[in-house]
Length: 210
Ligand code: TYD
Image (cartoon, rainbow, N blue to C red; front, top):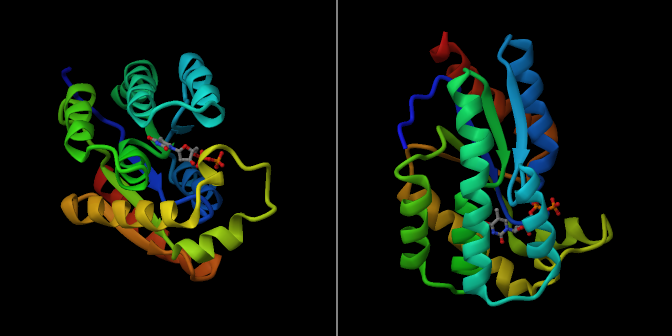
């Protein structure tokens, strides 16, 4: 895969209920105001096939190995069909979750082999990484309180609290091993404070791209 990218790739991560969805729109608007074309996409999903896989992944029981493989199959499609073509055209891509979620959920949460996930990552991404990953970090208990009653829970949201404790730790472990692209946002802060913090991260990226 030759990756000559002009756009920037920004991913949003965090356990369910950490509030990342609220801030995706904010970043997209900020880029738009700066005259930067951008698209919002998500994982699993983002392409017609990916969305079909999402439906299966979120609602059907399967082994964690199958789950990991399907997540990366959807990611392969997403990368080839949507993310890389947009970046090559200079369009910035904002993704609601990406590969780090597989490490946090299948790896840490469901205790699937970290090294097999790394193999899948190397196979599918071939060294490609987001330019920036915003990790919305929140204690698992607080995230659970925020989730409750907001919508019909999917398969992952029905996991026990221990799962989310591990998933949070999994995200923090990924942040430690990829410090160059991770920024950790304390999600227990108010929305205006978080947005000011995000703006302080995104603005230098905008300035550097000119
Ligand atoms: P999300 O879009 O955040 O759910 P919602 O529609 O409720 O906002 O994510 C879907 C779920 O998929 C989420 O619980 C995390 C899970 N997931 C994984 O387990 N592994 C992955 O690699 C990805 C991308 C998501």
